[in-house]
Image (cartoon, rainbow, N blue to C red; front, top):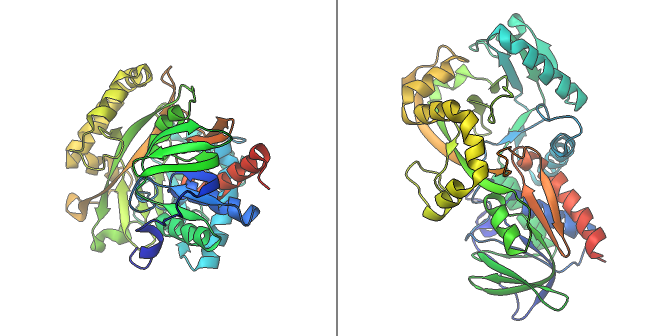
Length: 418
């Protein structure tokens, strides 16, 4: 990241009293992609990005595993399915134009047991319905050819799934925004949003920012920002932390690309897997445990406010009850390395505990409904002169140019941006 300090480390200073045609709240990859698409479509638009951190892409974008998803998992016709494929193509084109490296290392989904084969078949059906490029059902011989050290009786190979550094992409979006006259205001945590005479007054800890129209891409704080704007949607963000181990350099050859389990629809999260990163490192994980802080990347991180909000939300308890055993197993794996290693060895039996170092963590902003159901798709909405991204889980980074396009089109139509 050191080659991009001017694009993420400090904010711009707008002239005193300046008003903006449009303000984007949130300096992650979705907010940046949205601002970029707006400035492409409407050159000369007076636009500002407001970010609470001192630099851009600090949270979900900066803690991303880096996978360029192909659209394999998602229900055909869903926003995820449609925007993932569109976004991946647009993001790769943007990366080519800006010299950002990416690799199509391929994803292999492996079935370990006979009971998983019907789910693997359903995954193939979804992938083909979603137009995933080059999708191939593979038997044991081809599976060993693709991943010689992997276990499995059958697999599904997606050769165009890849990896990239999404933070670098975010900084490139920021550079384009500034080159087109956009202003990036960092260190501006939003504390309120008021309606004025034909304008929205955004209250921040560093003063007021005024915009005729607003788009909120709040990530881990999407629900709170929506409530500040007067939205009454019942969605709430519940944070889940995922911890990874990393393979030591001598063990990286155990995994060639992306090695994944067959997802089980009974459980809300995917399960542990292996991710070869753009820098050659291999991440193993993550687990999924309740985070005690929305920005809690360490096990000891605790925000009393965040935890109290989670525990007071009835939707969380309705989710927790049927998954109590699964949740306890995740906590056990998180606390005891041999249990984590045992889960990984189901897919790479040769892996040893001494080949793994405790690695990075991320926090997933999971939108949850009051009845305890997870909101699995992207949620894009809002009213009046404010648009919101209510839920943007994976593959939002891959889909970010397409999400930005949808939001930009909606803003142009609703706000009458000339």
